[in-house]
Image 1 (cartoon, rainbow, N blue to C red):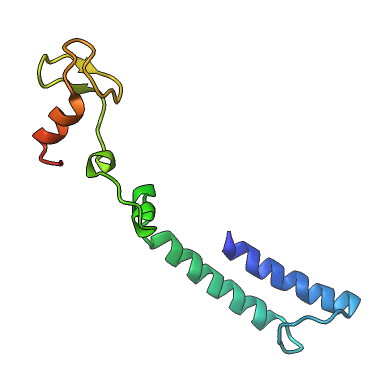
Image 2: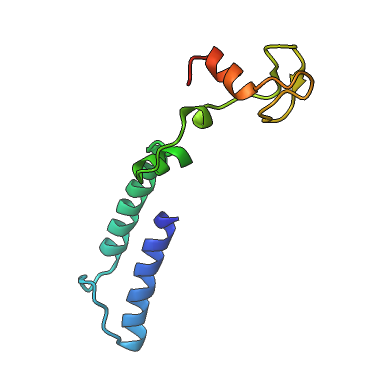
Length: 115
């Protein structure tokens, strides 16, 4: 988005200066094309770096803010899961098994040594 926005904004500022003789608070020479080209190159470099930077998850942003999250909530669980006690398939993120009422939270994460 920034790769398109900054050169367009620069072009509009130059047009405003040339048409309305309004003061533009960006220094450029009488030839605006090096200015537009430079802004396009730097905005493309910034967009490329932003695309390659690893994205932070919601939980990583919370930890940076000082909020501590239980590791069991951060772990991704692929559904359906199987109840370790009775073997029934569970198609939601239920805390208890609907058949044997086993506490899935402690059984599954204790099995994976995540608590």
